[in-house]
Structures are given as structure tokens and as C-alpha cells.
Length: 498
Image (cartoon, rainbow, N blue to C red; front, top):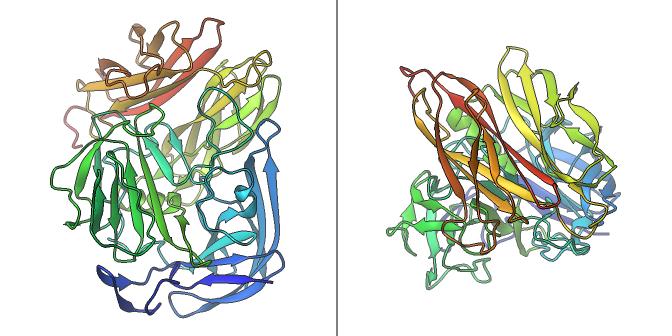
């Protein structure tokens, strides 16, 4: 039986694993995280960053696969920490929990190595667990920032190990997402450095020397940074990279790198692909789940009272029932008082988890409103792709909608909305801006040429009154199959400060 342990988050790299050591390219600072890869039934004792210890045992791993692609959609990972038993879910939008006096999460399980075209995690055991002291931040304050100047969940995302249900034909061979994709308005959103560090590559220009075997894959739309932890950060799909971001340059946290776009292997939708690589317990380079770090960084910077979460996206067949889950929503006061769902057909439901049956094919965007015990409200949208039984091997039409700016909008400001249709070229998008104004029609290109510079249809709208607005855009293909998308726009009074 094998136990794989990384004491300084993959501090299997050369040099001391405690304190500060000298690594290639500058000082090495020990992360706060500890990582252990375990087989079922194994137990190990982990020394945490504050010098305390935690005894961890992996009790069981259960992976739920869908009947369409046989992809892992949900996991239940039972662990015992310091004598207390609890259940974790791997990756996706799950945040660390408190168990046995420590913070712990599960990054990935072995089932993600099966029929996976990527297998980027370097996992050689049944599950990977990550641990922090009970009162510890996930990363040292000031060392990590949210990498976009944009509101949280402003539009679509793909998270760590989320199955990618994209393209046209459905394949049983699955690509689980490596890192986090954060959608945004093409050409309108600044990408900034999540950490300070060294520019290793910028476009096709590459630093002459960097860590042997490091996971650096240059491309014209990609920037790689290496930080003081020895971690590598990939930023992809830039519309433009700033001229001063060149190999060998040191950047500061929050420094602008360029502008968000859809270049490279983006699939035609505008987003930042962001992922972190570091040495894993196996000794190989592998991915470090980024979602929890992004969540923590955004909270530090923006201080939101509540963040709704109705993700990940769902894939089912027409006639099937799916569970929609808002339980990963977060509140600064610690308690969500109400989960309220509004569905495309006008029906409503309450509860963190609700079941919903879909008789007809389409791409649906269902509204989740969460209210915490102090009355603070936030919205998110659950996307459900419902396959057509007459075309069981093809994905349904879909839309990517977004807007800019997302911060500091006041009454009367122009807001640019963008949308692009996928898997359909017929029809038009119909916009409802949520303020009682007449519907507006646009016609995007259907992603016929993914990197077409004018692929997104654009429309400008001004809100005359402050408030919270739910935007709805829809389009139908030649067979009448609908695609829906939604956005949440906050508008302040004219005299408010952004």
C-alpha cells in the first residue's frame, strides 16, 4: 500500500520544504497547504503549516457517472480526520470544510483518470486530499488576487474537473476541465496577475532557462508566470497581451497582463483559462485546483456579503430528472436563510437542492436567488443541457452571454451586452433586459468560424433606475429547440461611488 504526501504543497521539489529556501529563479516560500494522496483504507499523519498534526484516513470513494457519457458528475469521499468522520466532494465548486479541527477538501479522485483525454493531475492513488490549519487562510493574504477585473460569476464558467460538454458530437471519451475558465466580455475585461512572479513565457517568447520539465506550453495567446511558491500559472485566450509582459520580467500581484479574448483553442467563447501547476505528491508536475483560491481572493478584494452558486452545468436527456444544487452558496454571516428557484416555465421551488424534470430538449438557465439571515441577496443560474431523443448523439444549441462593465454601473451608464450562439445559425437572439424596456434582437454568427473577430453580437443598453436586474436572452434553432442564457446586473444610483 502506498501513501503519497506533499508537505509544502508539492514540496517534493528540490530544496528544504519548511521556511524559505532558494529555488531556481528566486526565493521559495512554503505554501500553507498540505497535500496527501491516499488509497482507500490508508491512514497518515500530516504536519500542518502551524506545526500541529492531523491524522487522516481515507475510508471510501464513491463516484456517480452519468448514463450519457459515463463521465464522473459527483463524488462522495468519506474521510476520518483526528477521529471525526465526514464526507467531501471532489473539485468543481466545492469549498474546504472544517473536519476534525482542520480545513480539508478533496481535489480529485482516481475515476477522473478513466477515459480522460487530459489526466493532468498526476494522481496515482484513490484520492487527493488538501489540508490547512483550522484558522488558516488557503493562501497567504496579499499573495493571491482574483485574475480579472470583473464581478464574480458574471457569466459562464467551467471549474476544476468539470466534464466539458462542448463541441457538436457527444463522445464517451471525456475531457475533464483542467483549471478554471472564467467567461467575460471580449475585448472589455482586463486580465491581471493573480500572484507576483516571473514571466516565463509570453506568446511564443520563452525564458531561456526555467525549472526542468516544468509545465510550460507556449502559444501566441498564452502567458505563464512562476511565483515564489514555485507554482506555474497559465493564462490563456488573450485578445492582446501587454507589450511590457515579456519573459524575464517580474510582475506584481494585480498588475495588468492584457485583455480577455477568445484566441487559441478557446472553442470560440470569450474567457480566461486559468490554471496552476506544481509538484504533486507523486513527484510529477500536476494541476492544483484553483477554484477555492479564486473564491477566497475575490472575497478579500470585494468583501461581498453573499455569493450564490448554482453550478456546475448539467447534462441530461429529455424526460429525465436532475437535481439542481445551490448548497455551495456562501454568506459572510455564515447562514443562508432562503434558497428560491425560478424556472424557465415560470414554476418556482424552495430549498438548497431541488429536483426538476425536463420533458423537452434545449439549454435552460434556471434562476437561484439566495438570501442570508441579514437579508443580503445574490443570484446565480443553473444551466441544464437537455438532449433531444431524436438526436441523442448531438449537443443542443447554446448561448454565451456576457456584459461589461460589471462593477460600478450607475443609472444612465451604457452597458455593452455580448452574445454568441453555438450549434445553430438560424434565428435571432431576443433580449429582455429586465427593466420593462422593449425586447431587442441581435444575430450572432453561430460560431461558424470560432476565432472570427465579429463572432459576438453586441448591443448597448442603459438602465434608467438603480436596482438589481435579471437579463434573459434566448434563441431557437430551425427545429424550435431553445437556448437560454441569463445575466445578473447591479445598477447603483447616479451619485453612488463605484
